[in-house]
Amino acid sequence: MKTKVAIRGFMVMVLTFCIASAVQAADFSGTTSGIFDSAVGPVTMVTTGQGANYLTWGDPDGFGTGPSALTFTGMAFSGIYETEFKFGAIDYFNGTIVSGTGADAVDLLATLTFIDPSGVIQDFNVTFQLINTPNTGAPMDQADTVLLSNAYDPTAFFTVGGID
Image 1 (cartoon, rainbow, N blue to C red):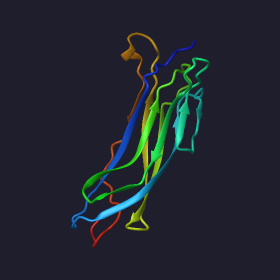
Image 2 (image 1 turned 90 degrees about the horizontal axis):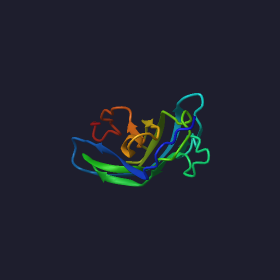
Image 3 (image 1 turned 30 degrees about the vertical axis):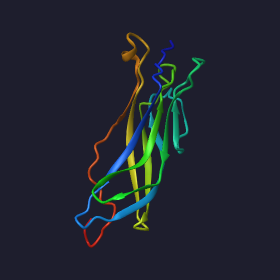
Image 4 (image 1 turned 90 degrees about the vertical axis):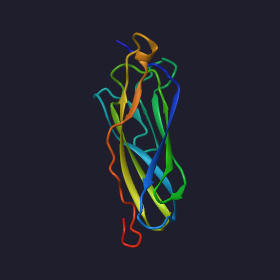
């Protein structure tokens, strides 16, 4: 039995972090890259792009929309201590797929490479829960969802003057 998953357009998440320091404000800058890895789902799950900056999941089986997809776009970043900064964006496309072929979760392995201060590299593993819904009932009941699965504790990126 085929079950459609609703198309609800595109969603963009902007990923941010905050670097805190007890020392006087100073600039930092760098670049970001990331790949999707370790997708999990039923044995009938269909994916492409693991190990790349995009992931597709689900068999579109002629529905005409293509599979659901996430794309991570890393970016150059800069900021001041104790302020949030953007380090990447995630685009989400909600495709129409055959029931049982979707992924349930995937990890985004992001790497922040600092240029200033130089030599600092920070890796993060961000897990996304992928909720694929059957196309039954009202349109809102058909909407798929991408959720951050884990809580994140503050992370020290580097030490300045002996302070993380």
